[in-house]
Image: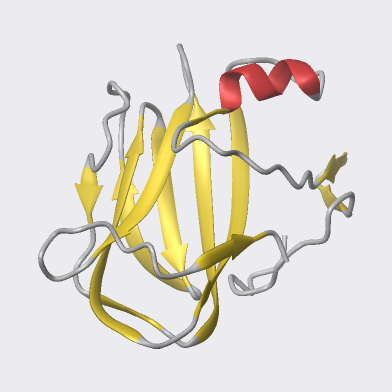
Length: 147
């Protein structure tokens, strides 16, 4: 994979990883919690021992300083914002919103790229990510897209 953690793959694009051709899928979830375990069946992959690379774009109408990225995941995961490491969850746990909270970050005006790596060990593989303002209130003043 590219070491550029700000690039955004195109829907249907394939990449070579070792001897595997891997495909990017654009998905739109209206729920806050996405289950990758069930997704493995849709793409004919084993439900366990799978590493998922996740990318989404949030578009901000203005710069937002001092926000915090929070993530919940019941598998190990790592999350980046605009190419910079933001949070990491190690080990296996129950998926709870805000399992981990980043230090203060800035969402820049315009396009911001969130990248995640989630490995599904035994059990389910749910995740969620959000941003909180300085008062701990969820940030909602942005739109999301996959490009």
